Image 1 (cartoon, rainbow, N blue to C red):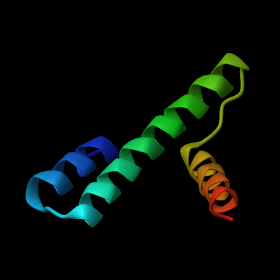
Image 2: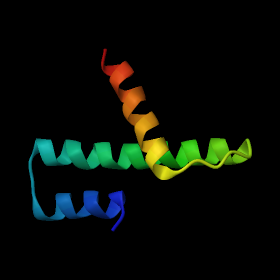
Image 3: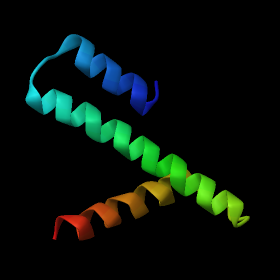
Length: 65
């Protein structure tokens, strides 16, 4: 199961603003990670998923401030 599948299942089995927001955030994070993979791939850099997840988390922290 990937994050888009998880978002779909959340929306399918649960309702409410918080679930909708969580599903939206999962989809957005998936899009961001995919974009990072593409950008790094164009530069010839291969990075593991865990590292990219950490980078996204750091970016989100700075955006929240």
